[in-house]
Image (cartoon, rainbow over all chains, first blue to last red; front, side, top):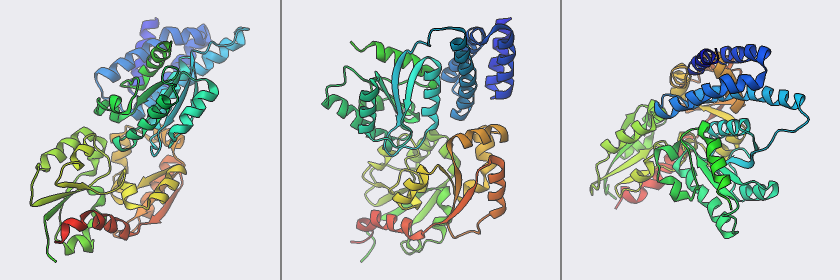
Length: 220
Length: 196
């Protein structure tokens, strides 16, 4: 039954049908709880969607955003349910700073990454658009974040990420805080990761939690 | 003073209205070739088209690119000796004062130029796959208003703007563009190549 519902949910994802997807998940959760809905249906459907996004490449960012909103809505309910039913607080996987680099105002990808990170148990501090390098560093130090995630859509703005790398190196923070970078231009110009001094990047937002966890775990 | 180089301009069609009656372009016999603005949605294809049109290393000819940083290889193209790209991250920043662009972006503006206003259904529904319901939610999550940039070459399409505004549930405002901004940017870029 789980596999059948997963397929139905995946169909809603592909058709960007938010209402259909949320109804299906809520209906299942009424009988089985949100945790089960996440484990049995949402996570497998998201994995399949992520796979399609990576391999077929016909998913627009806007489409990805809709699926992100579905996941966010259900995962928030699952987290609330867990808190209600347990005396323990939810475990935080790590702390991350997010933002679009100075001069960059393309927030969609960043918001999507933040959604999936939160859904995976990360505490995300989103600084918004047009964020100067210094602000990324000071916020990371303030909240003791292990990863700074910087987004840029175009080459012209992406090169500003070098300033974040430079500040991390200058202050001997490179071993303590990792720099994840992303945005359309990194997919289109793979050499840019090295050029700006990023520690890692991924092809789509669904892969971000795995990257952030890997980078965080690489800190000695 | 005579012309030093032949100058051709490859431009995004989004600038058509701003260029067609531009005196500086006419006076200097700059031939303008337009590529459809829909290529903005397919940056790799735009890259390909531009590379095909720009011949490497011509001594006699200079290519002026009227584009923002809209293709992944734009920086490589503009670094060629015989190519110059007008200053600006994107078409809006090219047409506006940088400070006004920044202010409006911070306010959450979604910009519309005449061509994209006319083709808004094609852009949102076909290219972005946003129907009214999803589009409303999507835009309202990111933007606070539409800003229509009036090039002065066409009547402001009030009816169309009302339609777009109602569809997405966002207000709109109209800003008159100062044509001198674009002309001055082109002049600054070409000055040393135009005259001996």
